[in-house]
Image (cartoon, rainbow, N blue to C red; front, side, top):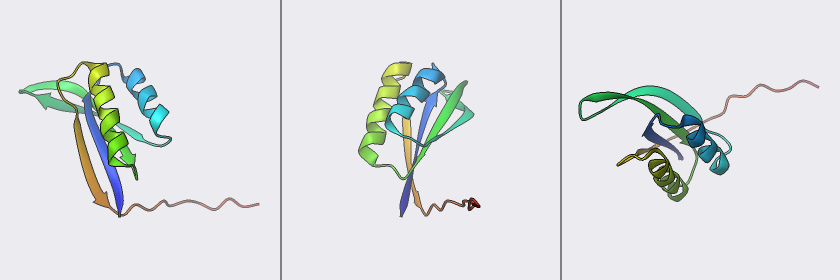
Length: 91
């Protein structure tokens, strides 16, 4: 069973957030989205990390919260099966 973690955060200093994630994980996806907090829309990003351990993801979320100055950052843990579909390189 693979784990997929999603970190939801306000889109504040995106480049610094991405650098922070890249220091810890070699592979991840960033989704642009619009979140709502207390009825107000805010530009947000979702950082998705496949097959990671919980503790490093939680530690990263705390660092992102401090960097962005947010009261909270949401982390969602999904379980499932992931499979890479790759092409074979011909010689």
